[in-house]
Length: 396
Image 1 (cartoon, rainbow, N blue to C red):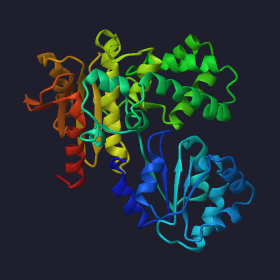
Image 2: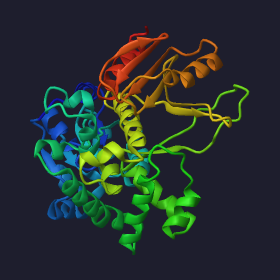
Image 3: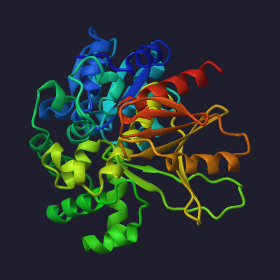
Image 4: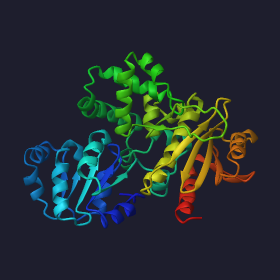
């Protein structure tokens, strides 16, 4: 197992609070992370039917097996157990007594807020980041990286991405979503997923998507919420400020794994990306998610937005942490052009000195410093975010 950036934060919190809960998509490595971090802690997987039945039918007897606590995997499969864990930790508030994992925030959030408020720390583990993969897996060209995505199993087992992601979608739809949303027409939901993939990196017009999918707006909203809760899609909200401008109000849509977006777009080989009309959007997807992982994998609450006004002026990504603001523009071209900096320059003037740093991330290979702005290859954008977040945490 390669080291995960979240591991030190996970261990540190387990020394302070009685319960630590790790959310994340299926196959993001939650189980391996937690078992590696707490190798001596008893383990129970609630996906196993017999284990789940025991936990649901006799929760007190189930927990009695673990007098010193345990690692309970996929706890959303037996959410009633959380109330009994509350009683246990209220009686014995030993730090790190229980470590819980879950892949459905939608099922767990309300239960946790009711039962474990003030008793648990919440962490989120997404698929591999560029930083985690660097030095552990072969360096690949940009289009190959986009195509393969970042789910650990694809890299650990050397799987064909198209086949592995096809299995992932089928499993997710049949096992998870069917349980949550009573989806009768699975093909219609897969069509909905494909339509969302076609809008990667764009403003989300859910009415248009629902019309194209042939479902009601209410159904589309429900499906989108479930996809967010299941760590399939990520919405990036617009940034609002009193700048004397009319700003857009719709969020932008991204996929938590860019490889999954490629699969849903029908891309079956990395070579197809060179001329694909959405290559720029997929590259932007990679960069935005690397920033999100930068926050989550350090145990930080992300404050991420984009900026766009009614005149078409925009910045792809605005990060905020403490008093700092970092603006990032993403360009797919492999050659740096002067117009790459125009949006950032306009936004810097608008911000009147309230911008800590600015960067262009592009599809080329060399890092540079131009006009007071950093320029970084997409495949090392994680280093930009890491350095900036590190400075913010140390107050610099």
